[in-house]
Image 1: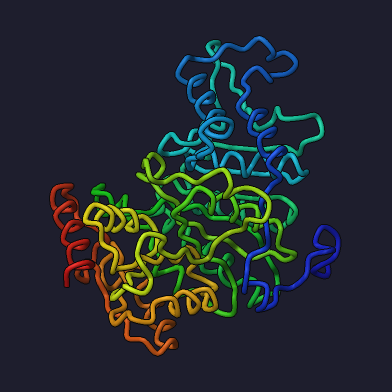
Image 2 (image 1 turned 90 degrees about the vertical axis):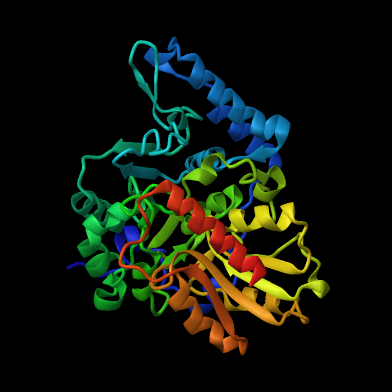
Length: 413
């Protein structure tokens, strides 16, 4: 076995605790950002034999709308933010590799990284930005989580300078690769001193789709966390998915990155980020504070992570609730203690602190957050579904009742 940190791993160092205290800046100069956005949305940049490709009207409109997000509306949705992350990386010379059972289009049709012309030719716009760019590889894999995740783990080990991503069709299906996650992703650095920068994208969220299409099992990943062995992320903004992907390659070390990605938020009207959130001086935000509530008037603080934030936000703004703050944990591990404690100090009159989650009481991040939050000296209450052996109910109507009850309890009990 060759010595580690030589060859392709030369220049990569071990991580230190202070590396996770604050994320590095990953914003892009505005002129460059706009230029790249115009390149990645210009379907006439086919090149060579594909220069005369004609695309279906729906695809042309989709890419034109993405262009307008940057140059006109200055607000980006999730799909455009993710595409811009890949575009910035390959423009800067970093190869990107993405594979999964439906990764070209995206399970929920938000990505469209592979598009089909009228003559059935496949086209990848991210490979037509410039002659100097690095490759963008995207593959629709066969239906094996175990086999494909194992292969991508090996690829990431052999190519640490490539952003290697494995995406589950639904996060629930990651349990088909649990052996790879347990034996390699979570513990290879501890057991064998072998780093790995593989990214896992796991669609997660309770939306009435039943027990097999709701949960990527956040609790399982958090029980595997110790010694800063990997990063657990549950983003709620397009800007944060942009920055976390760039942060993964900006770090001078490699750690597995697990991202619980959204489903309904891909088209949620409030799930957008301002153009300024992507520009120079910006970075991934581990914790996002409330900008609606009045800090000195706040009597209760709701901590949450992921999609449930938007359910809480709707109630807060509809009822004009100024004395209850909603704080989002975008990074669950390594736990962002400094950022969280700084926010807690902003609410000196708060007498009630709650963790709100969609998942049942015995699942989700609750157990992990409770163990960590006690260090602040504040008592943390739970608002969640009752403990269950199944991640979610099978009836959409019952799901809606449970979700409404969850939000009601968060604000009114």
